[in-house]
Length: 149
Image 1: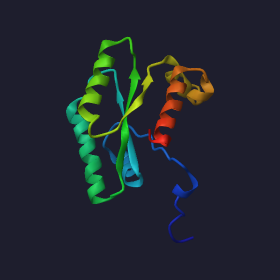
Image 2: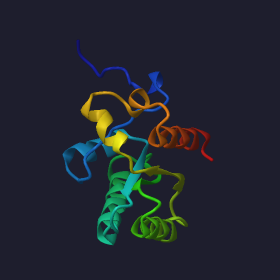
Image 3: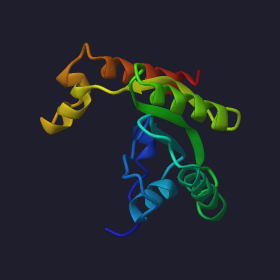
C-alpha cells in the first residue's frame, strides 16, 4: 500500500511522547511531530540555566524551521519534596525566571517511592496505588492541561 498513513491526531485528545532529557534524534522527532511540549523540571537540583535555555532555543528553532505549530505547553515541576529547602528554592526560581514567559503549572508532582515502584512492576501509578499523592497530582495536572486553567 502506497501513500501516507492516516493522521493519528483525529483519533486522540492527547498523544504523549515521553523522551529522554537529551536533544538527540528521538526528542527532535517528537518536537517535529508535536503541537506542544510539556517540560518537566526536577526539583532535586538547580537546573543549569544553559540546559533550559538550550532546550527552549531548540524548540524555537524547530518552530522556525520545521514545525511552526510547536509551542511550549508549560513547565512542570517534578520530584518535589516540600520538606526540602532546595526543592522549594528550585520551584521559586523556575516560577520567577520562566513564569512571566511560559506557563508554569500550579500542579507540582511530589517525590514518592510508589512512583518509582509502579514502572518496575509494569503498571501505571493509577493502577499501582490509586490513593497515592503522585496519582492525585497527575490527575490535577490533567485537569490543568485540559481545562487550560
